[in-house]
Image (cartoon, rainbow, N blue to C red):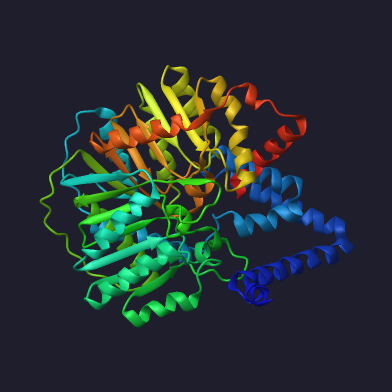
Length: 499
């Protein structure tokens, strides 16, 4: 009974009830409007046509356009309202300007030094990231790759214990449990030692996981914690823009990123969907400063205050070229997606991809299949046990086209694969928070690290090969399903860009 009462009084349930009531009001208005149905439908259809023309002339990808145009024209009474609420493209100028300050702050704080590339593809990729993520390539950096959450967590705790000046954390999910309790205990200890500790968490990502009381209690220990984009129970387009990044920066010298959130399933202290396969990377040296700037720019946006920083002198020996990058949903430039597309397009021998979701537009699919058709060995590892069954159906809907083009598709049979990695020709790699899906490409704040000719690429490549050996390869026969499943997948694939 106590558990039920706690659930009913939770913020998630209260928010859900509020939004449900707003939807009921919209439905009620529609029912009343049925009395003048012809005029109401005509009005919605005209507005739907106007919005469709607007969508056609946006810079969005074709799949996104088609999905919205179908909805706006086939069911205009629903489509018009959904477009206003969920499109993610109708932010007020005031809100858009505020969120653009995050990108501008990065541009102002990071200075580029001239780095010579021995490869034109690498030079072009680096230039793209610098021009549109405003983060230059850096030397004086080495890295350590973590093939699972358990290794990542142990190293993270060790480095937190050694912190002397600052610890900055930014995560999409924070969930009470062993992982959070251990981190929290160490943060409290370091705060008492005078270390500056700041935490950013995504309010929506944490809404059903950690209480406001738990977060507020951190202030008693001198830890500053702030939510990104506070989730207000009002239908509003801005609820779509979430902070999906995973960053921890220590003393401006060490930075962690990857796909790992702060929750026990990520370190397999709690079993969900079998073994949880994830990965992360730690940057030592100048690359950490770029990640720190990403955090500080977000902190300044949230708190409306300036945080002074100075770039340390780095004596770390270089192990290749590193280029941390971030992606904003506000600037109409899909950096995360384009980094993937550019890497695959430049491949000469091989492309190995690991992703929890493969819900992509035709441009990404065509890039991958064309590379395979010209002889590039392309392998994609997805989960064998999915966390979202509907999304997994959209992933499966792409198998046939991929396999027919020569792409090898694998399902990780040990459990859920949450790793986000791309390795090209064993010369280039990227790792971060960016999924192969519309939400990562178009709606969320994301981050990653592009790597060129570093020894850490061999570690990443070895891990993907291990994953492949622990996976089942999908054959063209496995793609044969009954007509009802094909129809379902077709519908889900069409509307996937909307969600």
